Image (cartoon, rainbow, N blue to C red; front, side):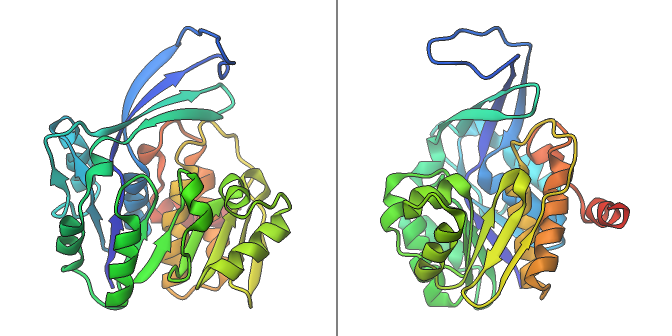
Length: 295
C-alpha cells in the first residue's frame, strides 16, 4: 500500500506577536520566521513519519523549490510535484504567546492544478492505495471521482472551510477528518453530537472529529470512540491538526481499533504543539511511542 497526498505546498511566514490583533489594530512583530508549510506538505510528512510510503503531488513556483527539497530530505517522494511559472502559495501566520494563531492564505500555484495533471498523478496508484486531500487546491472533486473509480481509499480534510462544502458530495469519502468549526459550518449545527450525527449521514465511511483541548471522536455510524487530549504546555498549535491527520490515517489503515488510533494520533499532535512551527514539529514514530509509554 502506498499513500498519495494531493495537496498544498506553502511558504509559511510566521509573525510572533504579544497578542492577536483586533480590527484596525497595528502591532509590532517581535520575531519573523519563514517555514515550509501547506496542509498537503504537513500531512505528507506526518504520514511519512508515521511509517507509510508517501508520495506528494501538488504545484509550486520556482520560489518554492526549497519546499520540494525539504520533503526529499525527510523521506517523502517528490517525483510527482510540478514546478510552474506561478508564485507558490504562502501563508501569513500570526502567533500569540499562548500558541494560538490566525492566518491569511494566498493559494498561488496550489489553485492552478488541471484535470490532466490529476490523471498523470493517479496513473501511479491502484486499488487499496490511500489518497489524502484538503481544500487548499483545485480539482478536489475531480480527484475524488477518479480516485474512487480506481478503488483508492479516500481521505478528505475539508480545510480551509468554504461555503460550497455545505453541499459537497461526501458519499465517496472513506475518512472525513475535520475540526469543530468545519463540522459546525458544514452541518449548520452547534451541538457536537448533532454535528457528528449529521456528518455520518453524509459520509460514506467514517467521521473523525477533532475537539482541540477536549480530545477527538471517531464515528462511522456503528462504532463510536472518544479520547481526551493529552495535557501539555502548548507553544504553537499551527501544525497540530495536520500531525493528527497523518497519524490517525496510518493507524486506521494499519488495522488499529478506533480508540487506539485516536490515542496514537492525539499523542503525535500533543508533541507537535510543544514547539514553534508546523512541519518541523511533526514527531517521529519513535517519539510518539516514547510519549505514550511515559503517559
